[in-house]
Image (cartoon, rainbow, N blue to C red; front, side, top):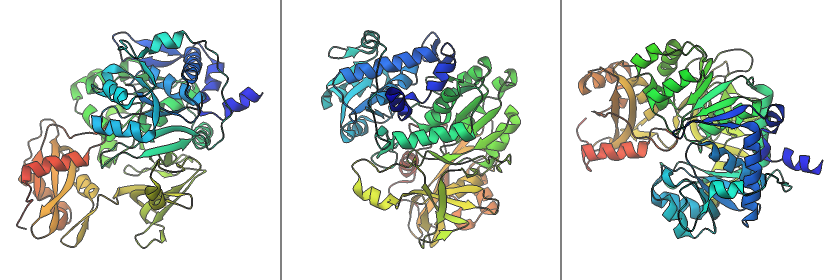
Length: 524
């Protein structure tokens, strides 16, 4: 009984009921290699126990941090949750970041061990060695000085008795993407994350027949909170692609008869460009698409529903905030396209205006629930700024209509002033996306001799579209406030994305400044 109590309070055992019901069922289809690997529930459970025993036996203690630099493969899941079983805190790394940022993350977290896939980042092995971590596991081929992951795992008995952990014990420590400065460590507790798992089970439990597809990185909440945790909790299955490539994604969606998929807006924008392949494939098994983790134009949702013939919804969350606080209503209503949905139960949300007072209709979203981070790691000043009496200040601006539907309006730190007018880049982007020639767009401020800053747009044209800068600039002036129209519009084949697949505004701004020059723009 004591062992069961220790398991029930440990996030590492979140799918134990599904394991007990059908241990022979395939949980994960891993498409990362030349051959498809099928990982069954019972096998994954045993491998998690092996990993917990292995990593604890290597000398790591509850509370120690373990860096994970692993691509999209089923071992990511077993290492992540196997470490949690031992009370060890996995630190999943954004393997797309540069060497300096990765080194900072490993050192800031105080990692004492690492599990690494050598090919996931060309510098990761040397970074771990330079930091001097004592426990080093690598997938084959394991270099000299590293233990071979699979050999060490299979040499460890599949038996593990977990330690007793308090609700406030860290389950894992995620880091923000780092697109706007150094990443911040987000501590998430076993108790808080299990609260969210139980909410999903109570209010949104997919049937065990569901099959998801994910190609976004497993270190990001869109994949882990949107697919892996809910689908494996209910006894469903997930097809995992190593990365996102539009045509392979569509082919896999059809071949595996997936009923559900999630992704960031950029994923679906690129999918819709593959009209020839979409016309040939059978997506009749697809029941639902969820788009999240970044602002989503209503037009994109409309098009997805029309093309794939299934409901398409939007949700909102952030790693440190629960993670999901807004989503489709549970009373059968459908959220209007453009809305992230309504406030979900068992948590609190409120909008706070610039005057610091609560507003019913517009302001910064504050959230409060058991899943909110107890604090950013080693950042007391950030904690003082963003955590107030249990409330997390998200930094995201929302409006709320009289039906309780929330609409994302931009980031508080994205807004800039142009000649006395406040401009929110998201509003300008949504306007330009209404033009049929625009597939993707990012709007950033650049210096201006008179107005201080003005908006400039970087646009990806829709396939076969031929609209030029003058046409799009006139469209913005004719259909929106003149002060917010982009003073220049540049075209590109693709917008830069960060690790989680969001448009990286910092890189876009660097590209734009290279085009306009360091002096910025003059004139009107």
